[in-house]
Amino acid sequence: MQISSKSYPYLFLLLIIAFACGKKEESCELSSEILDQDLTVNIVRLEQDFFKAKSIDEFKYLFEENPEFTREYLQMDLYPSADTLAAELLAIHQDSSMRVLYDSVEVVFSDFSDVEKDLENAFKAIKYYFPQFQIPKVYTFTSGFNSDLVVTDDLIVIGLDYFLPPTHTFQPELPRYMAERYDRPYIVPMIVMAISARFNVTNPQDNRLLAEMIYYGKTYHFTKAILPCTSDQYIIGYTPEAISESFDNEELIWSHFVENELLYETNPFEIRKYIGEAPFTDAISTKAPGRLGRWLGWNIVDDFQFNQDVPLDVLMAEPDAEKIFRESGYRPRKPNE
Image (tube, rainbow, N blue to C red; front, top):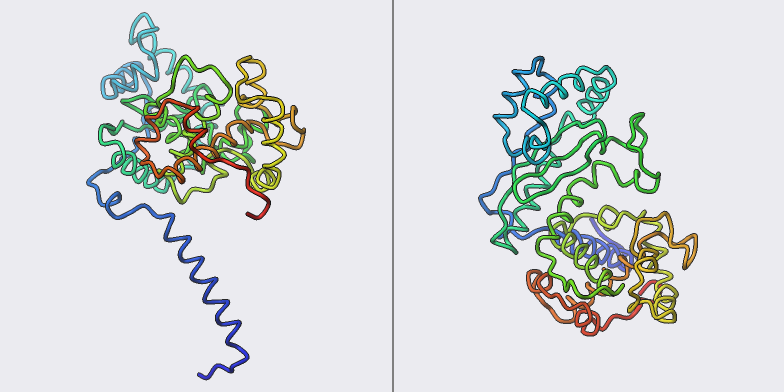
């Protein structure tokens, strides 16, 4: 097939676009060195076993079969005996509303293989960067909106009822802006962020806003490094529009922090305005998303890692927030930069 000379510019443009798209997709994949590790994650769907149990003895058998879950999640030590806990769970699981909730969870999460695979790859990446990381046991459960996510050194429990689609009839009692972040794509990022805390070294004497910003910045940077193909939306919990608008207004946001000398603020009530959960950062604008201090911290940490070219484990082990900020060379991006 012949191509006319008039088509050359368009063909060249298409080749550039194809190359750019291909390069972007390739760059987000974990390396074969990470993915080829001999590591397998099998998520135990424990809610199924618990809802099938019909007697106190059957519940006690489940306790014995899952000691970590029973001890750390069900908190057996708070009950006079195993029989007391079993009787309470038996009553809960026979409740008609709980049965309906369980049925909904089973429909929505009938296939959990995508989450299982994503979590397995995340564990491989964490193990690669932090060889001391020990793979925890992973369970799912339906708690009746009592617990969304438990992450310890030994186990992870995912409360699947919390992660039903935002449009589902059953919803946790959370503000809408927070409830929207409880959805299937957020499960693995939430787990990775929780795990990051054990590697995120800080200076406990530093109680400035800057320290909080850098802590969360390291958390998000860690999560993105472990889940490079995951959209920032599912890491920080902003909509794509909010992310775009935040970058468009980064100079304005940064000016607010500088002009009000916020980086060295130690008043916890002031710090909460920029770090704490909120539908918006009203100190800046009711149109600005909440937690903007965390978002700025992420940008600073990204710049530090890029400019200093430090490995992920070295970055996470750096407790000096001031050093990270000073050596980041951070400056607000101009729109479309």
